[in-house]
Length: 381
Image (cartoon, rainbow, N blue to C red; front, side):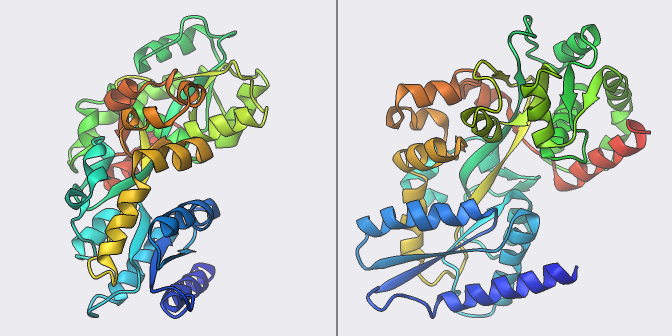
């Protein structure tokens, strides 16, 4: 806890100093504050910022990161909340995780803006409207969508399951050839378990829209089925562990983050023949959001920046080509800006139609916690 407090103070002090660090020749400094790993900051500094500056003379884009994971988003939240009584805030664009979007909206820290930008109408997936149960429509623009899917070795899997039920049948017939990392080794495992609840619990997908205190009681049979399923599964040591075992042929199938999957493939760690499938009725993914602080000092320029960042051309070049992420806007809008090889790599196995139909958001935060606790109590015991 001490480490986090120290990090948070340092990060927020750095954000405060942004307003004082504008280049002498810049008429306006646009402060972009982003949670997430260092690659999020590098993306703005090395790619997005320079391209925006070239189109907007007199504007200097400044980027700073507040750290990975939910703690980074919490730091952004606390920074804006601390400035709430001020007339102008020194954060013009904030990039945050899903988990903090609802609390930011509840504290009136965000502006409703997506209807004011051209690219706002290009994002129609659930994740553009729903952030772990909070209605954020109009207040967020997905920067990208990171999706969980099932990776499989086609030499070992001939009859590819396309639903959770078909997978359960396949695993029973092929013991220990499906592997996942439970719920403690990374979010690909948590996402797989969440998808299991969507598939087998009564009204499982309802957990994505609102909290129901009675829902947990209806998960008993689904969890019992998952415990039985685990007898035929291999528990892997983390997100990377699933890919590693898949690459070595120790397992034939397992849930992975799609961007991580393609990065491993590009590095030669898994066979280029390895493929992906998105199970029905759905598997979760998670975006990062562009948000507009309610009292951003340079709101008009911030709107132009987000609109530019979410445009099909920038999404294609920056988000898809650079990072193997799915675009924040709907996939069909980036197709004309991608070469056929890149499009085929990312959208042949999991098509835009698959993403629209089966790319789900994670559930309401309280339900997600209950799913993890229920797994510990009923599946691992």
